[in-house]
Image 1: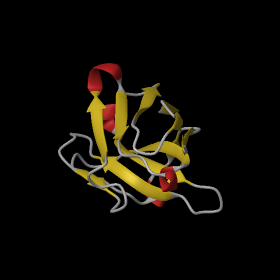
Image 2: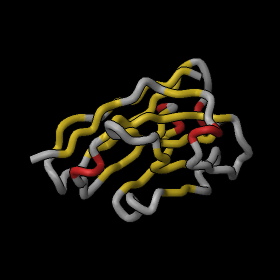
Image 3: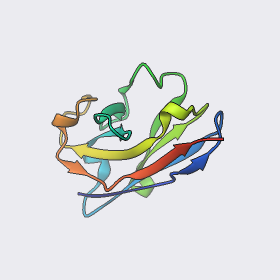
Image 4: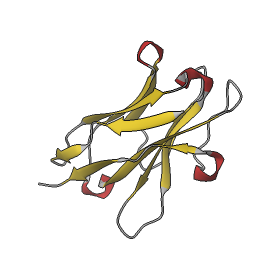
Length: 125
């Protein structure tokens, strides 16, 4: 599966963005999907994930109640709605996919073997 992220950009603190992860060469609902981010000088961290059937989701503590992950199977896309953005959310955001069980959801980057090139989110006034 080929993945491409979009929707990043420059936003003021408190603002919102909707990040998208579009898939080609495969049907994305056959994969568990995760969103990860990497800030300059920091390790990549898991932000959110969604299982194949969208029945299970998970979020990093730092983004709970601010970020929402969802699937759009008709468009073969997974979205990450990011609200109430903070300067510390500044990072390159990556989506990743892995073949998994219907209900599995993982925030561990080592579990994924398909990655997009990333989209940059900058939160600054």
